[in-house]
Length: 121
Image (cartoon, rainbow, N blue to C red; front, side, top):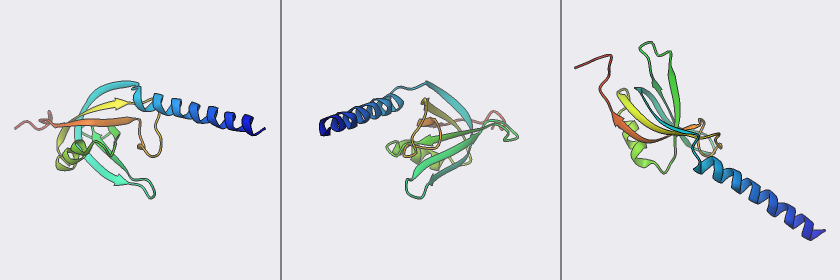
């Protein structure tokens, strides 16, 4: 009985580990989005995650919400620096997410400042 219970726990653990590895390491898509950075915040009560939004239109009707993992310190620093400016975000979309990774399926790994197409200098 104890052996069957132990094997069952091991199988459940291995299934969860395989699922987590698939979600974490296999991206659904990769891409680039540009827009005005309107929000970046470190939110949460027990688990803090970095969340942000860019506006992709003049009226703000198209909002792209994204998450940034804690290990992407350079991206977080650049997002804080470029608050309110036009930026280009490089992201990986995952099939799903876990609460300790972020609120969205879109994870930013690189940030560049870009000239706004709406207000040319």
